[in-house]
Image (cartoon, rainbow, N blue to C red; front, side, top):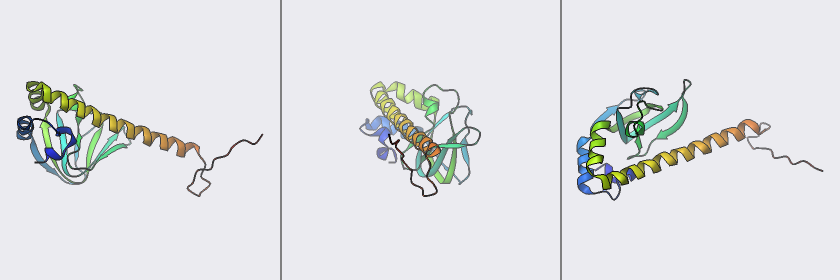
Amino acid sequence: MYFQQADLFWDMNRNFVKKVMEAAEKESHPKGHFLFHEGDPATYFYILIKGRIKLTIGEVGQMVHTVDHAGEAFGWSSLIDRDVYSASAECTKDAILQKFDRRTLQKIIEEDSSNGIIFYKRLAGTIGYRLLCSYKMSSASSIADTSPTLGSGQIEHSEAVA
């Protein structure tokens, strides 16, 4: 059972998880395959079984997150009433995924509201974690952009002497 390893489904009713598993479509994709592009219709939600997925935004493809842990979810735009994906998803290794149609998964969640609430709380936690990681990345980037390293790789701190 792939989903019992996923944080998203821990402690949920076994029948609920079984319905979700039955709705999943298992797919394999080669390295270099794009699952979706930023701005594409957000019709599927994914859970990684094996491989690595790079999530990028913008025309130059700035990386925002790497999905590389079994059970990790992505494509959440499809479940929060967004019409389009907010990022692009590219396989950077051969990947095996569970793919869910947004309407089918939303119906299962709506039919079991107590497990649906747990599901969305865990999904919010996943999104929050990625947001914190992006804050750290942008903070580290801005420090590197403004701090001279003088070729040493270490940031020089200077204090004014009065």
